[in-house]
Length: 491
Image (cartoon, rainbow, N blue to C red; front, side, top):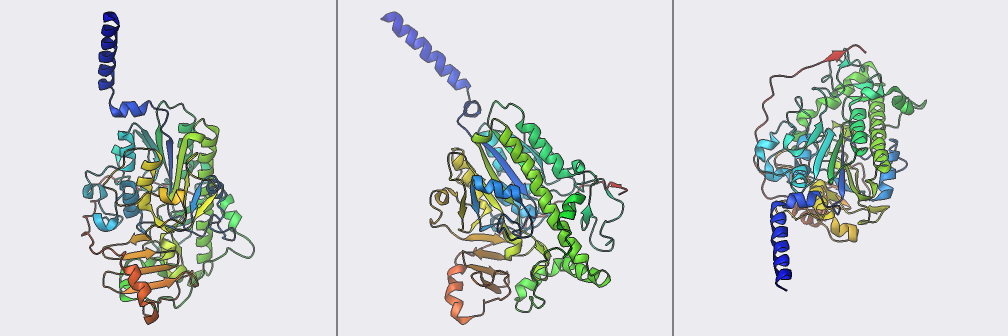
């Protein structure tokens, strides 16, 4: 009996010492119970794609295929219609009006020095974090990138992602914008495109054996300007009758309030340049739209390569997939080009979740949600300890019941400008107090501002309660690094 007691005590002490040496992170790292995460971000992908409606002109068969495997949110919205504030928001779980990160030059890491990005939090919980492409805002040779969020990362090259660039702009508009304000067949080989290289990184990563759960971040740059894609993608949209063009109302700005016109003033040159170019070549707008459509389909093809690689790997049935665009994009709708607005087209995005064994496949959820939901939802699906400092809500209640109560989507662009989206209404309140109100049950193009209608004041008041009462002061802009390059090559 004494020997048994001594043996028991010896084993107990030995095991306790071993357990003490094994940190919680190490324990999780060697656990097979944690699902992997494939996190796919797309830049500037709007809602004019076949994922939303088979009648839409932009073909995205791989996104449609992915949606059939999981849950598609038909009314998902960016927290901000601009790259840097949007990405800083969903990657840190914060809202722009609380952080003051409003613009593409806002120094997000200086504003949030202690914030754990979603990748950092998963790394702390034993995950291996790898990635490629555009995850954080790509600006000034990756100056906004967060090295602490990755164990391994393949960055986008140089200032221009498809560098070397053509010596002259392919669209001939040397006087308009920058080298990024271009479209056409480039690079000459698809394998030289930045998104092809990003997808190749994912293929390589997924072909290898990993002894702990991974968080793989893949950032697809297209259809961001320049609207470059292989010639065959452009030919797909160059039909005899011409491309399907956006619906535009010429007097669309007549009912906009002062807050809207003031906010939009800085970026009016985008669309004004296209209008000027059309006086010389009436097909300029057409070719631009074709360039965007082709670039979006090329992006879908690269995502397809990543998904095929996952399907061929041993990780398919134990990998959560989340796919999103950082914001939408205008191609002339509301006489506006680019993002940088609080309308539907600038904020409405593709948003897909796949979680084998946890959420039903082939489900569409129509409740409006925004991207602050990403961080808390992944924590729940991967069964990690909850974080109490996140601004967004987990989507788990909607996965269980698509009709469950859920607050409307909130969008912010620059200080004091906010939009609220319910299933029927879009309400915008600007810093100067002026407003827009659109009824999406009969005005999908947002052509008629109803904010001044007396009979809708009660509706408006109900939406106002979701508008933030206070907004943080804008954080300082990052100082441009001195060592930047501008490589060019002959076409």
